[in-house]
Length: 110
Length: 112
Image: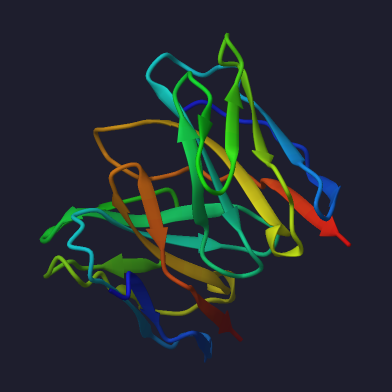
């Protein structure tokens, strides 16, 4: 039982490039979330999903897209990377009262 | 969800109890108090939660005042591995689950 896994762990992008951050969970949870965390700050919600085929915007969705074709996977897409998207990205699920977080992807856009 | 106020940082000696306060004066009746922590650059980790009664688990104790406007997380015997940022979060349970609103938290430094 791996919980929540994220790939890659690190990535450097040039301005204007695109990439997909992968998130997979093996806990069969319906709810999944993407957060970003800027240095010294708390986490901010980008997008979330309440089940396969259903997604919705969080607090800071601009510049990102998501899809949820299966219960297990919730990829986050950056289409035109900008320096403001330099951050650490965390994927999470919730089961009962507890939210489970992945190890994070550290993204640098230069 | 109600806002919370926490000190920016705290120090604690190894082996002593760490008491982390949190103010949530606008908490409503159906909102729970949650505590998470984040050890350097890792994903946040759930610690404990409560509604109005004091709670204890293998990691910590949560003391909630009778008026529910503040709470204290207690790590009974802090170790160096407890050095982390601790987040106090207030939210209701049910409806759109999750969507925790993280503030800046309290940076706890446990010193030998």
